[in-house]
Each structure stands twice: as C-alpha cells, then as structure tokens.
Length: 247
Length: 230
Image (cartoon, rainbow over all chains, first blue to last red):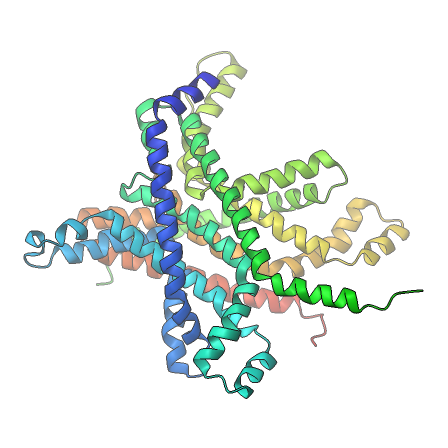
C-alpha cells in the first residue's frame, strides 16, 4: 500500500507540483480581484436608493443561488460558443485567449468570489455602529473619507473570520477548474488516476496537499486578524489598568 | 422555446433526480451531524478527537475530490471487502447515485455537526440539570429537552447548509448521475446549444434555492412562535 503512495509521489511529483502552482495562482487572482470587485458592490448594496441597490442584489442573488459548476459551464461552453459564433473571430489575434479555458475559469471564479465577499461585506458595513459614522460626519468627513477611515477598517475587523472561510471556500472551488480540462491539483490527481488506476493514492495525496494549504492559510489569516484587532487589545489594556485594586 | 429541442422533459427528469439527491442526503446529513456534534461534546477525549478531526479534514478538502475519491475508491474498497468476506473474487459496482449520496452526506454532515454543536451549547445548562434532578435518563433528556430546542437553534444553520447542498448536487454530474447539470450537458452537446441548456439548468437551480429559502424561512418563523421577541 505504501509502495504505491511512494510510487505516485516520486513518479508524478512534477504533475502534482504544477497542479499545486496552478491552484495557488487561481486562488490568489480570484481572491484579490474578487475582493476588489466586491467593494463597490457592497457599497452599492447598502445604498438607500432602491435602484442602486437592485443591481448588486441581483448579481449576488444569481451567483449565490446557482452552483459554481453551472456558472463555469455556462461561461466556458455557453458564452464560449456565442463568442466562437462571431464572424471572423477565429482569425483574430484574441482568439488564442478567447478559446482558452483558463480565462473563462478565472472570470467565473472572480465573479463568484465577488458575489460571496460582497454579501459578507454588506453585513460588516451594516454592523458598523451608527454613532461612529455620525461622529465622522460631525467631524466634517466626506462620505468617501468616512468609508476610508471609519467604515472599511471597522468592516474588515468584523468580517475577517467570515472572509477567511470564504477564501478557503474559493480554494476548494478552484478544484472545479479540472472539469474544464485545466490541470490544477484535482486535475493532476485525476490525470494520475487515469494513468495508474491508483485512485486512493492519487486522490489522497492531493487531499493532503489541500489540507496543508488550508492549514497554512488559516495560520496566516489568524495572524492578520490579530493585527486587525490590535486596537481592541489596546482598549483592554487601558481597562485593566483602570480597574480599581481590590484591597 | 419551452420544449428545448424536444428535451424539456429530460430537463424536468433531471430536476427530479436533483430533488431526490437532496432529500436522500438531508436525513443522512442530520444524523451524521447529530452524531458528530455528540462526539465533539462527549466526555471522552478519544471521541472528541475523532469528531474534531473529521470536521477539520473534511472541511479542508474540495467536495469534488471527495466525490471522486468515493466514486473511484469506494468501488474498490467494497469490492475488496466483499471478496475478502465471501472468499471469492466478486465484481461490485456501486451506482453513481449512491456514491454521490455518500460523498455529499459525509461533507454536509461535517458542516452540520458544527451547526448542531453550536445549537447544543445554546441550551441552558440549568434545564439539563433540572431534567436530571427530575430523574430523566440521558436518552429522555435528549428526546424531551434537547431535541425540541435544538431544532430552533439549528434551523438558520441548516437553512444555509441546505442551500449549499442543493448547489453541491450539481458536482455529482461529474461522475455521471443524470441530474440537472448532466442532462444540460447532454442536451448542450447533442443540440449544439450550450448557452440555452445551461441557462435553463441555472434557472432551475435558482428556482430550487429560492423555494428552499422560502420554506426554511417559514419553518424558522414557526419554530420561533413560542419565543417572546424583544
């Protein structure tokens, strides 16, 4: 049994390594671009104007209410087909990109992550104490400055644990790229199984790598959470100092 | 438009399979979740470790990988087991439907155990002590005191999980179960109209998740009917 594990890990280590790199790449780009896109969505979502609110609401509702694999197929096969039907597109220089599953995957993951993160951010923004926002207004801050100095820092503090979960969710979501022929970690494992007919060894090896990524991400995000909450700690210190000494 | 190149019925059949999948996994998920939560809150350290590592491991692995592992690996495992048990070479095929159900129950059970653990911890200790003082056995305490309240505390979490479950059933199309996504893929391939078929599939999923959300909201309201609201 263990010989088979060693066989898979030594013979196909390059496949797994390349798969790992592609997984990390997909994860990093999806999370960064998705988060950037989520910020305007979340801000629009908490708007008091119903029409401004409706657009991000519809976007979030569509992306959270349907399976990611469906979104991916819709994008890659569905939109891909519509693009391919455009006259002369196949001779155009952009065709090399337009038929590559990598870009469709990234686009789907970015939009999906944006929808989920925007919903988390909405909760965070709405939970910022009203008094703090009013105080900022009273100090003469413009709405933009209020967001930058007061609402966003508070929001990040509050949503960080949920955001961490969502990043891990996105990591797991990148495994779907293997269904449109990309060889990321899951894809590499599937390729090894097809070659060697050793499903346990290949899939469990990939699973262990995923667990290592999740564990490292959790540790890193915990460290950042501590940094985000550094002001809480300071407040605690003040309180403990101010406590009267019991005789 | 509505008969989808004559494949409208096929899509509806796929929808039925998706509903079957969801409703088969739901009770399994609840049972596994309750067992997992009990293990995590157990007084025995070994059970706690088992419960915790189950959640940590399952939550860190993509659902797709677990589905593939159970579909490809499960067949071999059962085959070896049956061969060893009966003493002769036996070929076993686990239907894709059931390996998919097993995979989803395993995944959702891990998440449900977290929901139930939190719910169990929200039951006031005083009530358990009172029940013990009245002479109830642990089983009676569970059935009479814990379970009716667990329902109320766990519903919002289960609502979320059921949404995830509906969407995760689409992953089982990868191993060939003919639910919505698979039917859409077949239609898209044979009729050369991927956009139409996947659009219909997505709308069907959207309808399912919307209905589930509505039903669970009603249930939550009903479960909270005896509670004074601030």
